[in-house]
Image 1 (cartoon, helix red, strand yellow):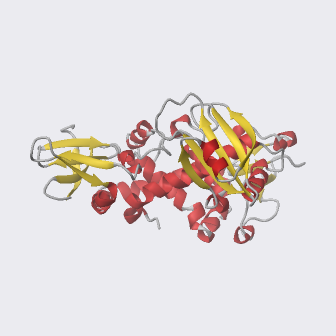
Image 2 (cartoon, helix red, strand yellow):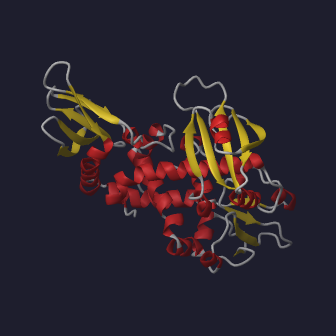
Image 3 (cartoon, helix red, strand yellow):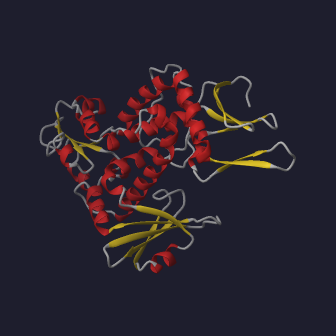
Length: 378
């Protein structure tokens, strides 16, 4: 542990352990202080995301140890993180970074060629807004939402989108319409909570949706001028795909709670045992579902349910390496439409979108208990 750092908050768990938050000007670390051994262990906060983990410390007697579940430690963790947020500049930094991040996530993709609208490239399909400048008048068009609108949201965004005039096509111009703020007021769970969790997670060095983004988290704290944050885009490789997962979550927000996800040793056998029938198999290249190739088998059941059995290629882990996603067939049919922007359906993109949306939801729900007391999240 670096002596140049500073303990910013501390909480005794019992006579054996004290939990602390430590930092030296970058993202904070959790310190586990073992009173029995007079020793400290430094841990990044992403360690807390696996809620099944146990914290084990050596006892007073040689060869003995004491175990704590994360559920047991949660009140103490909430307290020290809340103290850290209150007694440092974190809350101000979180507020500023949330606004920066929101603009990154809402930056529209600009399309000026009519032919491109039917075959949007990957980087443009992973945006929430399309700045459509394909009309007859140069520099004019509309901000078109690349996400389904609820009934209330249809009152915010007119059919055809928000007008663009005189090449006012950037994210600042989109925000000036007031539409983003109105969307957030109608449905904060969809438009506010995810941005806030992302901002807090990035500043606190939680994972970037199970990917290690700690170097970028520390970079956010090393700014020479906090008023001028580190510049990045939604597809910045330092984000580890987190921005695109957020887009998938927002786009499929009204469907994600109908998707069930589980790990499996043998997805084919498990699904067939649940009366699913195998229909087809699709090979997914590296990058669509993770950092390895995946084989995805589509299953259907007579009751209108469908499932995806996702197998990573070349996995040597003894853990449950396969994933199963199940949902009503109607969810998939609608998702294909929502992902196409009026163009051709793409199974590859839609499967990646639905699995990303569920992964983002699970990641967010794992982090919220730690940050909700001080991050303005309900």
